[in-house]
Image 1 (cartoon, each protein chain N blue to C red):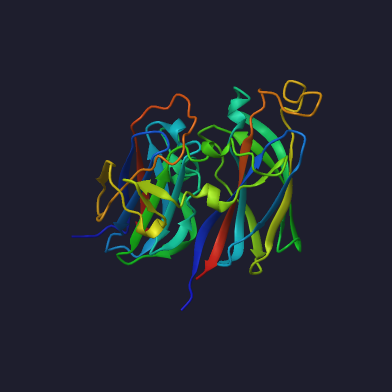
Image 2: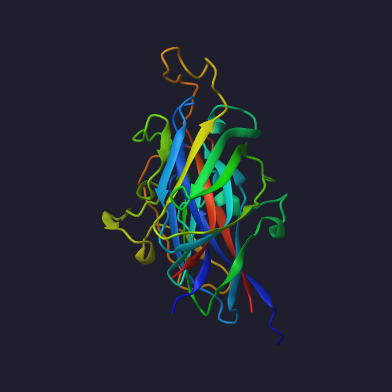
Length: 142
Length: 191
């Protein structure tokens, strides 16, 4: 007998260069049948480049589900290392087709100046790779 | 005696070193039938950034092993009812097997990984979730049968069957963290 349960599925991606967009492309697990909430958070890395505890936008993320059949929209990604950081999920109601792709595109918007990128396009030692995590609140069918 | 309609069942974990991985295996309180939420508390909040916590109930995954611990925490300024992660659909329990894995500073260890496209990309689950754990020279590979030694773990009210372990799998560049520190896992149960 199958049962539906709530679970939380994180998708981590790494940002290696301030000027090069990151393509998101991954298959969601087959047990996920619906997505009821989405949250995108900075995980680690940006704290190595700033003494601020909060930056409202470090990048923009565009997300698509069901192998590009459904465009969820664009999400601003903040850097928030404060204890009172919001825990809210964006509401979603997406029926997930089995074995389809989660795709998207992320563009970094901070630390793009000459302090961080040399003239030849390589990054300086002031740049720090960072990791962003897409949290999916899901209904799973076992 | 009247039984309360809810209970915070707790388990305490002691994290003794950078990169340490602690597993527990417990049983939900027999008088309660729903797991409605979870939270973590820690005396040293910075320790949670980049650390992860996974949870399974009856061998079904609720939180992936790479779920960031700081998203589950409540501290001095944040009351539990503001930070408790509540499940939209409570998890049915009946003296259920509850397993958790806490990994200290696990995400920082991924920052140096350059084996992706030039701009970056999705980090494979096999890199994020450290399925291979080395204990006393023996490789153990599954969340559900993880057993270990060399860990100090304390039991909370109503929990039994706890075991724990650690893994020196990766060297983690963590600045100014103090060890050991304790993490308390609170499971919000109702009848």
